Amino acid sequence: MLAQAGTASSTGQKEQAVKLWQQAAEAYPSDKSPWLSIAQTRYEAGQYGDAIINAQEVLVRDPNDTLANSIIAISGLRLSTRSLADLSRQNNLSGSIRTESQDLAKLLRESLGETVLVPPAPAPVQQAATPTRKAGAKKSAKAKQEESSADPFGALK
Image (cartoon, rainbow, N blue to C red):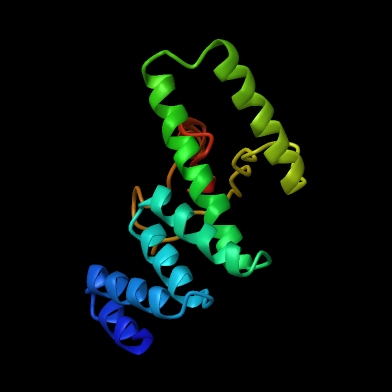
């Protein structure tokens, strides 16, 4: 079943692969590999809630699985970022939600050993123009700065 699922996945038949992995998980309930494959497939499809659920099934079988923990962490951050952006757009990011979000961002910075969640863009290196450089090919420092400040969580995506 795992081989058939792997073949289906590699040929782009992701849902067929997931069904085969689910069958393998039922047939071999102590095996973490079908759950991990489902979690990875859901993560790659941007289905972060499902990715988390399936990665948690991996952790039931192997609490130290690094990939499952990574899927949960990054999927959770992506869901949080999406929700915070939605709240911010709706002007509803205030009060306790704002305070808790700031506290969580601080905890994340500390966990990563960073003083800021997303460091500012480095200063551009001045280079002499060469005849082979196409006009407009290099972004201005201001454009780069505006891009990096537009989405403070962009580096986590």
